[in-house]
Every structure is written in structure tokens, then in C-alpha cells.
Length: 168
Image (cartoon, rainbow, N blue to C red; front, top):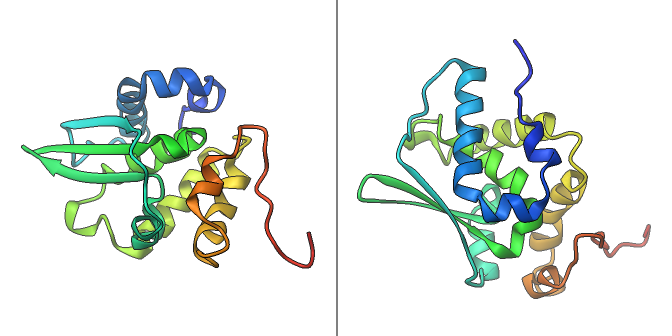
């Protein structure tokens, strides 16, 4: 099997990804379609960025949906990506694009989510923010009172997550 051709997700400036999120997302779905030689289950898709604040309880509802909210309206899959996670657009876009190939009844099956997460990690292994992404769940979920989303919002692209432990 050939390699998934998504270097544009790794190499494009974040501002370009954010500005063109819907077309970038559709390009990712097309690349996956060619790679898998399989049509997506969801064909009518609208992706947008939202400025609304995500609550900690919303984030804790589904570990594998951090940064995005999926819902159907008029037979169109709407994916809203929180601007709070703009630095992780390549990861979220690829994860959500892979989910478009999973039958609706299986989209929230944990084993499928785990597989998709691992596949995203393999496909984006050269992405600078990938390591930070995988620390994010621990940061958000292990001690919600100590690590809140407002702290995460203050992070800049050059900042690294600081995990609070005796080893750091």
C-alpha cells in the first residue's frame, strides 16, 4: 500500500489551513479516498471554525473528539472545529476525515477511535505539534480542576505544554 499523500497538511502555514478549512478538509477526504480506494460514507460535508468557547465538560464527553463537534443537519455532516485548537488543525482535520469513511453507527466505537488516532499519528509523524497533541488528553482530563481549557487557550504556537509532575 502506498503512502497517504498529505504533506500539504504538514507543510502549509496554520493561517492558510484555518482560512481554507472547508476546501482543505475536502482535499484530505479526496486523498484518503484515493489511498483507500473507497468512497466516504459521508459525501455532503461542511467544515467550519467556531469562536465559541468549549466547556471542559464538553471536552470530557468524548476523549476522541477533542477540538471538534460533529452533527447532521439536512443530511449534511457539519464539523465545527473550535478555534481554541487551531494549532492542531492538521490532526483534527485528518482524524475527522478518516471518520467520514466509517459507517455512522460505528463512528463512536472506541476501538475504531483508537485505530484512527494511531493512523493519524503515523500519517502525521513529521508534524511538530503531534507530540503535544498526545499530551493534551492528560492535560485536560487527568486533573480538570488544575488544568483548565482557559490555560490551554493562552498557549502560543511556540509554547510547549508543561506537565505538572515530579519529573519535570
